[in-house]
Amino acid sequence: MKTKKKLSSVLQCSSRSKRLLLLGSIDVGPQHKLALRFLLFHGS
Image (cartoon, rainbow, N blue to C red; front, side, top):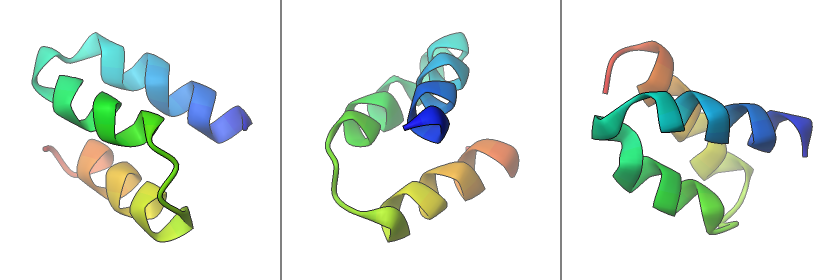
């Protein structure tokens, strides 16, 4: 839960990541969350 909250605030900072925020709000599983984090930290 803590990680999800953190992700949301990080995503909100970037207008390019609004799509990812939508994806992040859908709980599809840990694999997807890892992919999101990877995209965030390695430049989406």
